[in-house]
Image 1 (tube, rainbow, N blue to C red):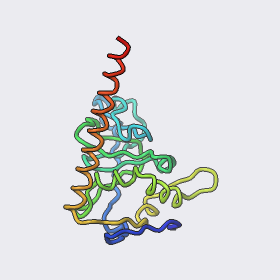
Image 2 (tube, rainbow, N blue to C red):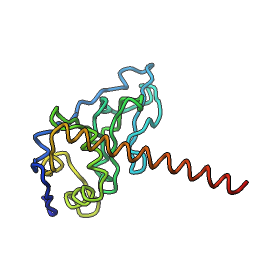
Image 3 (tube, rainbow, N blue to C red):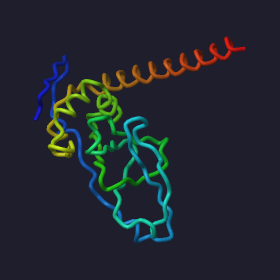
Length: 185
């Protein structure tokens, strides 16, 4: 499956040893008067609180998503349609069409999510999607993909450095907007 190979100073491992699919589906329609929060996923935001719906208006079983799970649209993951569940999202259910999975204690879910969003990893995803007309990344195929896996300490440091740079970029963008407004005045 792998057309692109990864070289790294860290061990290259197969994801199957570090991820597990969450395929449990909840029949929300069995709770007609209860309101459920539904999560969506896209290539711009990632995972987001999409809407709320009463069980009586939902006619299929939905997948439950726990904090720190990853969720992707198997038909659009090749364009970056993947998300990471944090405490910021208040909803806990998503479409049964999406793939939901967790990481084990040796792989930080945020580290994997950030890796998924890189151009290099996106190319590997595109190389591994199957189908002639509509590309599809099944969980079994994802599990066979190999990634570099540093220690948990290094994963944490990489994530912290990434988040610090994103924060700095956002602050600089806000400063630039403020300067533009001052120029206009």
